[in-house]
Length: 383
Image 1 (cartoon, rainbow, N blue to C red):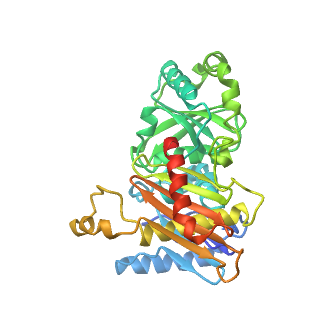
Image 2: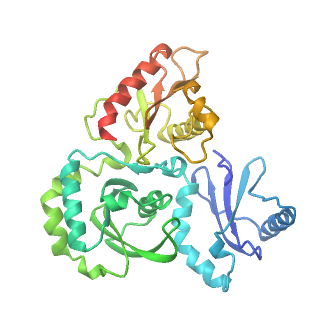
Image 3: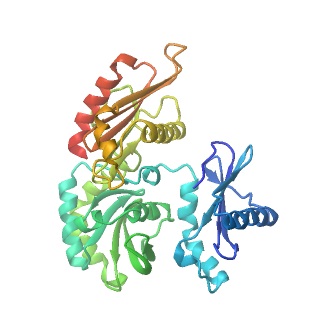
């Protein structure tokens, strides 16, 4: 809930719904963690407004000044009956890195799109075969290969995870400090909100990790070096080729038009996406600006131009009738008053796929839809 400022400070404040006791407060300024914290008097005042609004059936979700945004997060139903506040606050510290990554300038976009950030490895079939064999040997059906928070390959059971855990699990792994192996308890908001599962991670190469979601078994000690070597040592070159994909998403040499400064491809049925702002990183705008442009443009086109996905239960009959009248492409031009300046943003939807492109100022406006269509056809075999 709430919004992020590009320059001001954003505070995420979590309160116990019944008592108003602050459970944690995380702050970010300019996309980076901030030391500036909310004074207790401000927290108390906000809680007072929150409690007053509750009596009137009004929920306070955010408060904003000229350079500060405060987001109030009221916990899940399971958190409303808190028996030991101090113990809960201690347990919540394990989530701080994940929370800070949402407040910061992340290279991922799954939090906004609710699609899993993915990459396309150059020899994906070999990696997929090894992943399936390793999963069987390890005794769990839920296994994925993750680079910098993006999924390289995963078992069928992993892909069947519901939202939001399908997005949150790789994002969590990408937010944690490097470690050779982990045994991490996780609650799945959709699949298991009250009983924790175990998230096991094993680092194959720096930044490239195997992730296993399991119950009490297998023990981490069972996933020894011999088992890893058996399945992954023969694919060491293919694993190394995955490392640059963390920021590029697409395999090296994939043909993209030179005007493309970034792209976001979503498969709305599979709930997966490819996102990169690195095709030509030496041009303006900066990578941070490109990511902000994509987030703003995605929000705009999703809210105002494109219809809901076909088959959504909340879709009304009249919306189905008028779906043919909804545009399938739109574009936004910046800096049009000065030729050769600014940039172009174009969005195109064909079937279950939606493509957003950020293009340089040299790209002619009349050719935007043709370029987007050609690019989408080229990317379709990948996702």
